[in-house]
Image (cartoon, rainbow, N blue to C red; front, top):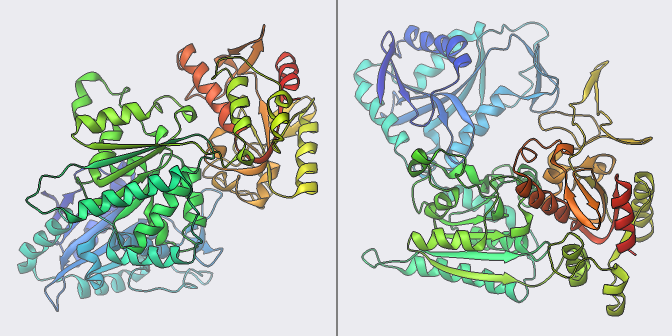
Length: 613
């Protein structure tokens, strides 16, 4: 675990990472020389320390013992090469020569890393005083214009500049014993952290329970309640088992179409398990969906947001670390088909990894919502993996339709229109009128007419409206001019021009980020694609069919050469055809009260207008 790097400095490597070359060349040697000069050369340094269940890494984590108590002591260090920066908000800064958007204040960044480490390392959570945090801007000097001290510093978040080198040395030697005779204890402290169990700490579970306490529970009906009860029963069964008892893990599979209540089950379970202080996490494969859950379900608690993860956050987690892992939108769980066959034994399918990490794994999925290569999970495939691992499988099919006005007729209409059901397409009025179905289905002769339809419906009947389209236009980052960023009108249909939603990693004043386009009231002005629509709902849905899926001689024809989605248009024609139809099925089933359709292809638009009557 330990290598000599420079003059008495021992560097311990995180087993899963080799660090970033830029950090090594420009920042890390500065820190290592600082430790040598401070006579802390025996302190153990974990470079690029990977935070549990997260893609984030701490630049350096110093491991030693406290000079007063002799107990393990840890200091998280964030290294910044910035020469200067200016506060532009309570915890935001704009660094000179950096990208357009602001950065988190360095002290706030390391403060959050400290809290996160405590939240997912139970052994540290029991002694939070052993963890401290500091950011070091080693190229910066304080000037009369310096304003980064307009910030509430604490033990988790301090900031030092080049001219505060003496203060940094003093503070480090107050936290880490400079006596070289403590080398063995420092090595033991590093080993203790590296080998520590990584799971949601009770302090995090308490915070999550308090955050979720004010949230109104969903009323679960019929099969929804069956699925909910099966999970809680499996948790109780796992709790009751004796250490010597042979135990068979239960995997719960819940299948349902759009709006059948899968996410309602997931959030209800998460809330109930948090109240019971169970180690439960929620995972998806969607950045937009996950960030929206963090914002609205965690109710503003940045710590409670930590229970919402991504499928790929569990690759190096020990088996049965969690009580429950809730995998929402599990059709997006990846296979390892892209991995060369000779390496697949070392890279098990992602579903196998997710089953391993929890005593009760839960998968909620809709097999007709897979829209990217590798997103091919079905109930059967997950059940096969679970059975191969000796697990007991419980399956629940959700029959209800709670989106699209609760209309089972609309779901059938979409499936028939897109060719997923036999019998061919049928006019909406022929299918729904006799049942007095209140869901509104319409089509438009132009994109401008579609937009006016949405505005009129929202004005007359209330609710939210959004436009989504097939990924058939280029997507450019915002244009920066005169200190302001503006969106590019990429979606051009005749004289009608609108921008896509904001690219990830960019900011435009007055425009929500891509993750919140579907939920923020300011999201109407941008066109969403499948990646910012999937998993969300709004009252009135406008759907623009691009040239990637057209009608020819009464049959759907997929045209991958018209798609701008590089992740999809390079797949075999048959695969692309299935994925693009799934895409439009998802876009067409986002509306709670109604939908309006338009295609850029005249023959296809005539088809849509014929069957939406």
